[in-house]
Image (cartoon, rainbow, N blue to C red; front, side, top):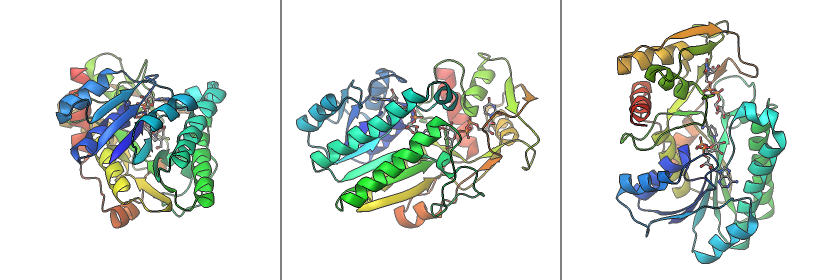
Length: 332
Ligand code: NAD
Ligand code: UFG
């Protein structure tokens, strides 16, 4: 299939391009590079040995309807994967309009283009954040609870927009993929997560402390009701997550389909730090500080639906996630 990958130069998008190409598909990346670099496209080609024939790149903003329609007019597209969102929770609180505009307009413009050009397959990057403070493990049949920030709200709203479009268009097929915590990098060390400025997320912070770029990891609270008091998350290797998209596309059926992409395994902050130190034989200094506003104690998936229906399951463990994240950071 020929897949339009909106946001394909970014962290998860670039790994998904690699997985798609390795599975024999070709990709058209549409990205405005607001949080990525064009080099990612060269790296995708380098890893897969593919050329401009299978990997096309358009530097466009996917909220720009005219530019998006030009791409749809010029190519025969079989499906769309929509990664093109802004994702920093704190920034979304400071600049809500920017988040609502970008994340909702991109969903509306891309889905409208699919309807106009009769493209039935649409895969959306959602997030475990839509579950709110539900009881763990999170399962797809749960009622969603309120989100705690504008970023999370854009995911919940995009899910509702796409669900309503499917209700009104019976031959449109949408899969909502609710990601847990993607970490790690491709084993080549060529692509990975390279956040601008000081990282918000745990793993890039850990790798930058290990490298000496940052002094000390701040662990946000050790008084949660968890195994050791620190927050528990379901860390998933980004390559497993990327492969989940290929499975989702292959099995995409009419209507709205929802899958958790997680491992089903919870890991605390302290457990992750220890695993990183042991896997890479390097020390990560840390201190315990106050809880971070908006954080929940535990978040992990019930991952059985994706296994049963997509035949997909995460294969890589915490040690591999820590090794690959460190390899990328050292190379970067
Ligand atoms: P990322 O920032 O690395 O990738 C997003 C890409 O989209 C970037 O290359 C950016 O330049 C591009 N982009 C953003 N707005 C655009 C626009 N209007 N037009 C064109 N390109 C645009 O982020 P990521 O971690 O790869 O996340 C991908 C998707 O997955 C996002 O929608 C994010 O919200 C979602 N998600 C991420 C996580 C996570 O922890 N990384 C968790 C859950 C969901
Ligand atoms: N943490 C620290 N110190 C840090 C960073 C994080 O102790 O410097 C802790 C957090 O308190 C939390 C855990 O590490 O307990 C993971 O935090 P992240 O910021 O890495 O990830 P979150 O679970 O908060 O959020 C991520 C994405 C969101 C997404 C959510 C659910 O950033 O976009 O997973 O999928 F919505």
